[in-house]
Amino acid sequence: MKTLILELLKQALASVVAGTNVAAPQSLTLDTARDPRHGDYATNLALALARPLRQPPRKVAEALVAALPASPLIAKTEIAGPGFINFFLAPAAFHAVVKDVLAAHGTYGHNTRGAHHKVMVEFVSANPTGPLHVGHGRGAAVGDSLCRLLAACGWDVTREFYYNDAGVQITNLTASVQARAMGIAPDEPGWPADGYRGDYIQDVAQAFLNRETVTADDREVTATGNVEELDALRAFAVACLRREQDADLKAFAVKFDVYSLESALYHDGLVDQTVADLVASGHTYEQDGALWLKTTDYGDDKDRVMRKTDGGYTYFVPDVAYHRQKWQRGFTRVINEQGSDHHSTITRVRAGLQALHCGIPEGWPDYVLHQMVTVMRGGEEVKISKRAGSYVTLRDLIDEVGRDATRYFLVARKADSQLVFDIDLARSQTNENPVYTIQYAHARICSVLAQARERGIAFDAAIAEAAPLATLTDAKELALLATMARYPEVVDIAAERLEPHLVAQYLRELASAFHAWYHDCPMLVDDPVLRTARLALAWAARDVLAGGLGLIGVSAPEHM
RNA sequence: GCGCCAGUAGCUCAGGCGGAUAGAGCACUCGCCUUCUAAGCGAGCGGUCGCAGGUUCGAGUCCUGCCUGGCGCGCCA
Image 1 (spheres, rainbow, N blue to C red):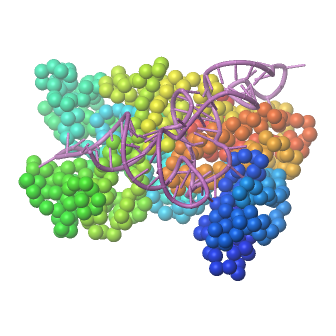
Image 2: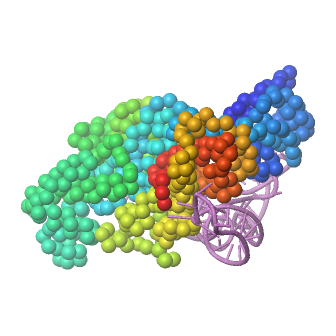
């Protein structure tokens, strides 16, 4: 619908500019009008052209309108205000949306912008030292929606989860489990400094003593039961927490294609190779017994230690090795979704990659950072979960408010805004809760279609596609159609800007437009032509609602 | 002190590349169930877009400075 008007406008523009030495603007803006009195679409093209053409904007607008090719889909145009051109569409233009939706068979709004190019989205990437917390949940919700959006835009998406299974934190975890296995509780003599204090450590210790076998998505380990064997303890503890995180992710309906391990980067020699290549590149130096990378060559505010005086590497060295590996695996596009508390790594990783001089473009990879989540209940901040001890777990939220509400609220805010998660709001099953308003719209349509079947009214996808729609003239149904027409643009922009919250916001508007229409325009009327047309519209609206909900990983229930 | 992010209605938040009278949900007030699900609809109330300058036909949006909050500033990840 929009592309069609843009095309006409482009022709008008070409004809107006012809014969002058004024270049046509590189891109045209055509906005969906906010005020219905401004029609359906509006452009400020005349205002933009006024200066280069040295003519009053309204006069330019008149010329543009005169040059606009006639179309049966445009009812009229108006010149308004300082020189806006408003387009009023004919109902037929709206009706075409229903056909578009139905013909797409569940892929309406999708596009081919990605052209099957590979993109990796790395997200969650929690270290296996405890259950996932609410921050990981935000990362999971945002990252998973990004993957769904990119896939809908024709990208070949790989979902990757990276975790540190070798560093100081894992040593710490191992010591904590060992202490628990030996009957030592936090703060008792022998409890490791900075040990993990959550109850889950006790569970892991007990399972280890029971010689249990644990299976996670990427590994299986059987406990030896010997608390003196640190390697066995570590392997078992990591497997246990991986399994726990897998269960959390499964409950959240988030899946990964690839798990990457920090330890593998060492085993495969990628870390040493990266260090050697960085040294060879001339961007390193030795000082105070440590090896430094001159990250200041690439915009950092100070240089960073690569190899500590104890001989170990700092965390960003394997990160650089890992990202070079991503590049070598053919991912010319990589998006890392992380908590913003790690944003300082961005400069270092990019600097390391640039210093390698291996053809990686500046500014690669992309990052999407999410800000902190504060959980509120009863007007007070919630900070503690029994199981984890020191933070609110994702599982707590899912158990308390459900997967759909959790996902919706965690993805509905712009990632770089801090988020207040109100448990009372999320769990309320009333009109206070936007996620239910959206799902209810979907369920309502399903319910009416079921009613139609019960009444013996023949209706299916084929009938919907063939339905004449000329009787759809009510203002509410045109408004609903206009909202549905915006969906492809929402998907496109949300994927382009890596902002899945736009989809969540759009769905609320779509649900609202649907409910208003539902209220004013009964579907199961006696007139078979009108009835069929409205059922076709409802069928299409259901497709768009289900498609949008799918992009944010929220279910589209048939009953509520 | 330096860097990143944010500051928009009582609350939670949207606001494409600068564009028309700044929007939504909730809360609050008033209406609407004999009617396909009232988990809904309609109307009303509610604003110094953090502050101050600047750029221009036009600024919530761009620039500068400042204020407030979060995060980071480690040979932790």
